[in-house]
Image (cartoon, rainbow over all chains, first blue to last red; front, side):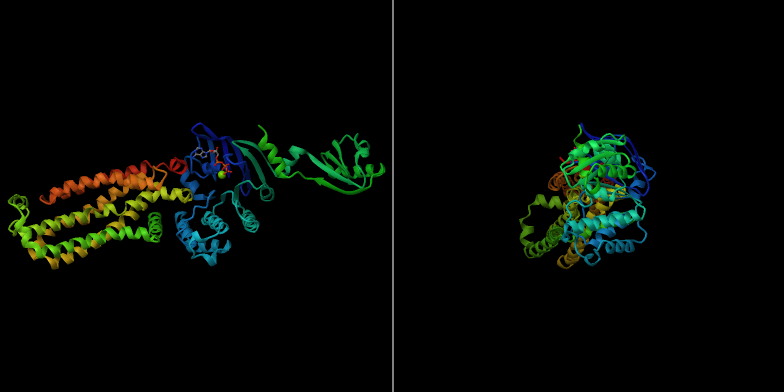
Length: 302
Length: 263
Ligand SMILES: Nc1ncnc2c1ncn2[C@@H]1O[C@H](COP(=O)(O)OP(=O)(O)OP(=O)(O)O)[C@@H](O)[C@H]1O
Ligand SMILES: [Mg+2]
């Protein structure tokens, strides 16, 4: 659905996107993570034919950026970083204009569908300028969907929204995903990326890493199991230490943190051994690093 | 075509929600309709004084124009012509604000990016914007001119009226004037797509258009004494200039630069 090769954008001497190579499949929800100024918006603008790459190639929906720009614009939907609504015009009018520009066959039908879907139907005749930030964002999302694009670019869809509005938008994205649309989301919200995205990329001018969030965790930290004991864990390190399937054992207060590749197979042995050594096990759990840990580590690498 | 229509309707919906802009569209034509009628009414009562105060030089000056009219009538014709000339260039002044705002205004309101992300061509966008700016100005001018012409009919005698409303002037108002308006609007749109501040766009457009108007006025003052051919010639020249300017404004419109330039 989206394929880039060495996609590059320079603004004068300023390298914003450096040789980005990516492949995103149909129906995939792809998270594009990166700090401010990483080049996320620039990438989205290139992939939606708003600005031209200075190097490399990109194919979106089978159309080549720079050659089939009309077809790309016609078939993708974009939520721009700022909603950019016509404040003096009503919600209805705003959407009608864009439905026509997107060559939608049934303009009133589509406009009504998305106004209702996003809970704006009652306010359809109000000027967009009177809307709250969350409503504006929803209107802008509706605007991106009028022509039923198979590929959707969302540039920070929940930034600045309160938790309830953000959840609403997230649920809506889930719904779009279930319709089989390909969704490219730029975000700073790691929790959101963790929950919504099939795969994420960590990006800062260059691509740092692409994987599923699960894969990233494993790749960076391996898998870790925590044994919570009733007593201090230090004496039990020696009891398990020599097992060949362990990568690392560490005692922290009452907790024994053990890194290993296949906990499903080896945890029962470990538990037996610890009990035999006299440990009183209270809980056993997998230690999950937050995506934030992973992200911060990747972004702060040189 | 549908997309152009959409742009035009959108522009009008936005512009006409702004009372101040509406006022600038209506104000000049109102003044320009009232002014000649008032002066006509006044001149009528002072006609005698006026003609006696004319020296012989000015009689010669009017000579060609007033075949067989009295000096007072001739003065009236001259004045009416002057006003018609004003009507001709009036719509040039009205749409500049709207046109100068058209692109850079959307840029500062951030609505340009979603707009350019749609499959609209540059030509459709700009032509829509230009028509949207031209039509109200021309329409309101025509309306004002008709009111003026009808009222004038009752204020001057038939001979003067016939002389002052020669076909040449109808040509000027209904053909040359819209062409001139398009000239100003295309210049303003071009300026609007190359600056980053709407205020600069307006000032700069005015600056570019002003000499243009002066040129036309300067030429046209002579016209009052001359004939249809010159008006036609001006019409043709302006039409050619229009075609070139509209073409250039589309050709020189750089989507990316407009979207990303910040200074
Ligand atoms: N028009 C421009 N001219 C010059 N440099 C630009 C321009 N637009 C973006 N840049 C530069 O490109 C880099 C990437 O910017 P971009 O807006 O793509 O970042 P981003 O990842 O979207 O950041 P944010 O999270 O803050 O939205 C930045 O260093 C920025 O300064
Ligand atoms: Mg951004």
